[in-house]
Length: 93
Image (cartoon, rainbow, N blue to C red):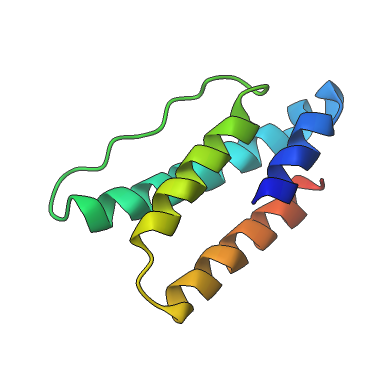
């Protein structure tokens, strides 16, 4: 996750605008929903706001750290890693 965030911070604005920022925000929202579902089962998840393309690196780090705190098994860790890698590839960074 740190590597993905660093790559987003170093990416040119044009790459962020072409979809990297949107992909990162989608990942951050997905991870945040996962953490909320574990921490507050049965409640409606809150959506992480779009804080702009220059904030998405920080947003994915916050969401990743939140979800890391609630992971319960090696399978869940592997799933989280898979989600991050797939998002990074789609983002092209």
